[in-house]
Structure formats: C-alpha cells, structure tokens
Length: 379
Image 1 (tube, helix red, strand yellow):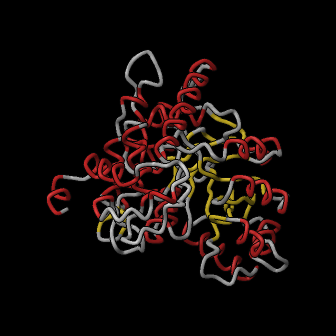
Image 2 (spheres, one colour; image 1 turned 120 degrees about the horizontal axis):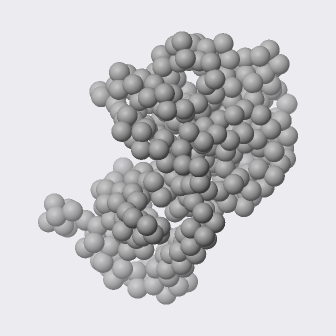
C-alpha cells in the first residue's frame, strides 16, 4: 500500500480509503459479517483511512465500523461527520452528535470530524458564533476530535470560500473523477493551503464500475478494468491525499488495494494522454447537450438534461451498462423526472435550446438506446 500525508494534519494515510456507505444490505440492515470481513481485509492490506457518517447504511455504518475496529484501532484514521440537515446547528447539538458517534464507533476519539455535505449557505450557519463548528472545536480542545474538516457539495469556487471562512479546517472531502473534474482547480488550491484532500466518488458513484472499451482504451499495454483506470487517474493527481472507495466485498477490496499499491499509478505521459482524451470527450458531450436546462420544465415531465446525460455516458464514454441501469431509475415519484419515452413531441423545448439540438429526435434515439425490452414494449 502507498501512503501519503494528509495535509497539515501530518497523518500518514493510505492512498486508498474505505468509504463505509455502500455495505450490502438485507431487509434494511447491513450484512455485518460480510462488512466486517471486508473491513478487516482492507486493514490487512494496509488501508488505514476509514470514512463513515451518522446516516450511512440506515444509520448502521458507524456501528459496523466500530465492530471492525475492536483490538485494531491503533494506526487507523477514523473519519465521520456531523449531519447539518434537520438539526438546530448549535454547538450543543454538535457535541451531542459527536458523543453519539463516539459511542457507536466504540472509540475514545475521532481522527477527522467533518461538517457533512456543506454548501456555502449551510457553511455560514454552522460557522456562525455558537454554531455547530464551535461544538466541534470544543470537542477538539478536549481530545475527542483530533482534526476538523468538511465534505463539500457546491460550486467549485465555494470550496475556497469555506476554507477561508474556517482556517482551522484541515481536511476537505469532495467529488472528483474521470467524468467530473469540476473541482480540479479548487482541489489544487486546497492542497496549496495545506489541507488534506480526500476524494469521494473516484469511480463516479458507480458509473465507472461498468466495463467500457472507450475508458479501458485510455491506457495502452493490456486490458485494464474501468474501475482500475478511474482509481489510477484520481490517485495520479498530486494534490489528492486519499481516494475513498465504497467497497462491500473482499474481492473489491483486494482489487482496489492492488491498484493503490502501485508505486507509480500513472506516468506523466499516461496522465497527459488521458487528460487529452477527457477534454475531447467533454467537447463531444457538449455537442449533444451542455446540461444548461433551458429546455426545462417539460410540460409532460420528461427530464431532458438527465436523459441526455445518460445518453452521453453511452455514446461518448461507452458506459452503456451504467447508462441503462440509471435509465430504469426514472419515474413519477419526483416532478419532471420521466424518461425519454414519455415525450409526446409537443415541440416546446426545441426553440429554447441555445445549441439548436433536435431534442425530439435525440429523445427518441435515447429511448431506443437505453430502454430495456420490457420498457420498450410498454412505451
């Protein structure tokens, strides 16, 4: 296993981190035996960064991680998070949540304590005087928490705004992968300011878990799996400290650990070749749809940008299995979230498109390419 320094924390962390939000579930409960086995195998292979949160896996993630840590806590870096949604966001509330996490994890301290899923609006609330971060700071003074950080979900430039507003945050956890490089410049800026950078979704939230000849063709010298290339790309970024993977089987742990144990994940030439290909793919994707949303709302409830985003996974990236799986997720439970087959060709969308895309024909093509036979027979 390769190790890196987690920014100014000074912690020596494994390049591969274990994200504990994707344990296998049965009847809404974690398969604890399988989960603990996977966690222990990761520890055996040198993984020492484990990331959890209060709500992961029906609120059982911290408990399962705590079981795995029994008699194996030394040298392990434990991360968990304060959930700012539906809470008072006060210092006292944060202190209560920290104590509950300590109990579930069955540990005396948390190495990295995150404010969970911050955007700029929420950041201002938790950072206000008497807010949740004050509670975390007090816990840090008492040794219950060693380092503070935040996981990030907002426009990339807001990451730096949050860092500047909270100079005692030592770690940022954010999205970054082959399909989504929006945070790349902010990641570099965070690293320059001394923060450890932890990447969530290096395999694109599962989208890059499917085989793709186009992705696998990004590297010469033999067939590589799509997840391997995705993980190697993220780890080749010199500003990245840890890449989290939501692993739920021993096989997945062993495959990812082997990738993270490579002394050189990508040569400079390999990374340059991949970046050039990514830029070309982004250009092609933008030709089909930039996702601007001007075509919305559709009077018949079709989620036009999301349909085209999935079509780009298939057409541009060759991730057909991923695109078809996600196509089945459309449905009427949320407004404006129907698949392309629901288009009635009213034509209201096309005059609004700044790229003059033939939206109706593209929706037909999307449905033909991504719908299952069952779905097609019902359309």
